Length: 297
Figure 1 (cartoon, one colour):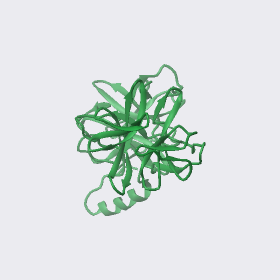
Figure 2 (tube, one colour):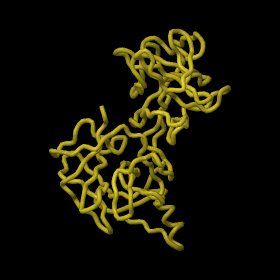
Figure 3 (cartoon, rainbow, N blue to C red):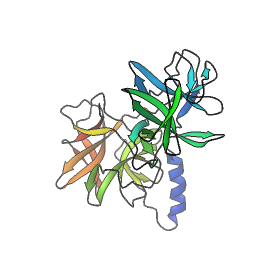
Figure 4 (cartoon, one colour):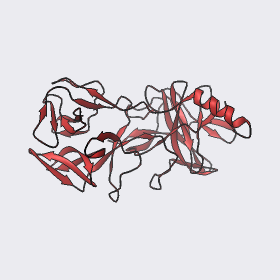
C-alpha cells in the first residue's frame, strides 16, 4: 500500500487513510483510586527512598501526591483525601521527564487538564535534599509541597509525552538518522490496530512505514517521537534487550537504524529477527548491521 495523493485522487485517498490508519494515542487516564490501593498502570512520577510517588487529583482538579498507602495529599492546603480521588496512569508507557529549557513549556508537555481557578496545568518535579517532590507549573514556577508547606522553584523537570501528534519538528530534536533527503526522525503510525515505527523529516508532513508484509505506506496521521531518554544500542544477538523501546502499546515492532554507504537508515524490527528492515528508494532492504533504541538507566 503506497499513497501518492495527487489531483482528483486526493479526497478518495484521504478517506482511505482515515479508515486504514487510526488516529494515534490512546488517552492517558486519570483513574479513580481506593484508599491504600493503586490502579493498574499507575505512573511512578518519582521516588522518596524506596517508595514510588504518584500524581493524584480531586474532583475539582486540584493536584496532589500519593505513595499508594496514605491517601492523596493535596499540594495546597492540609487536606488528605482518603476516597474519591484519581491517580495518573500510563498504560501506553508514554510519559517521560525532560528538563526545562529557557523556562519554556516544551512541545509535547502533558496537559493535566484545566482547573476552575488556575487554568491549564502542566506537571513538574523538583529535587530537594536528595528527594523528589511532585508539583504543577504556575507562572513558570513549579509549585510543590515540602514538610507540610508549599514552595515554588524555577529549577524543575516537566512531564512530557514520548509520542506526540505534531507536524512540527523542534529545532532541539536530534535526528536519529540521515538518508538521501537529509536528516530523518522516528515517527509511528497505528495501522490496523498495530503501531509501526517509521521515518519522517522536516517538511515531509507524512510518516513513512513498512507494514507487516513489507508493503510501503505513509500517512499524515502520525506521531513524532519526542523527549526520549534513550540511546541506540548495537545488537550482538537476535534477541532484543529487555529495555528496548517498542513502537507503543502491545506492538511487536521496534525502531531500528542501520548504516549503508554514507547514510543511516531508519526501519523496523521484531524480536527474534536477525535484520533491520529499512525503506530505501522505491524498495526496502534487510540489513544485519543495526542498532535498536533502549532506555537509558
